[in-house]
Length: 233
Ligand code: 5GP
Figure 1 (cartoon, rainbow, N blue to C red):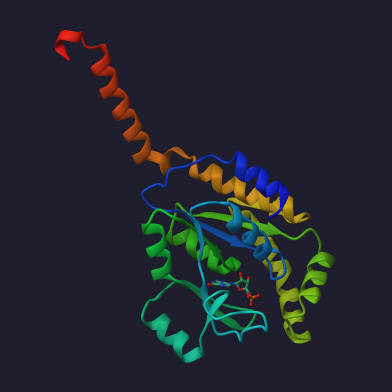
Figure 2: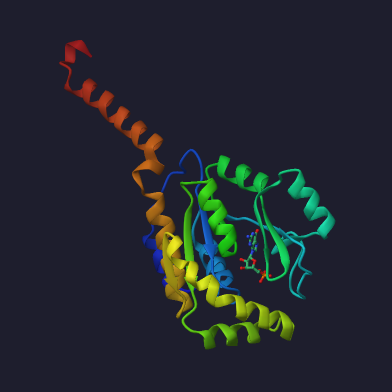
């Protein structure tokens, strides 16, 4: 666990779960480093889970079905689209990806927050559907860094690499539609920033309404009891 994120965890507020969890939608161009940042944050922020998408892309060597993605063929994916099983879905760099509606509903119903790692089209769809979701764009510091990261990852064929790099500038232009932008020039700092956003969003009045009402009502009934003359208590 990185030290800066650890510090933040210690300093982080102890929040009670709100009645319904919040969706944190994280996007970046492929190779932008969102996966690493999200892993750091999942390690340290409590009551937070990760939405495992469905994809028609073939699994990479290190990927496990049900962990990074649920890997399905095109036929199954199309059936799921037809059955309305996706909150959103999109064709990204030539493969299909979709967010499971059920997983999101089940997780958030328990009061847990959930991170969705989706492309810019997916983020736009979720923003439209769920107005109280929070969207975060991870900005790679330069073209060269993005290119080097994709090469170092070693998971894409030269053709796939080219498509991902070619699509990146257009994806970057979408940043202004997001609620937050994090420059990923340093992974510890960027992870700490994402954790801070989650903590800050949890502290919003609207997200804490039931808890705050409970505290205020208890406060008032306590006050009444204490202020009443002894013989009337
Ligand atoms: P990769 O093939 O590198 O795992 O992912 C390619 C792109 O698809 C990434 O930008 C990733 O965030 C995005 N992606 C992953 N899951 C989903 C999803 O469920 N919906 C959408 N719209 N994009 C996704």
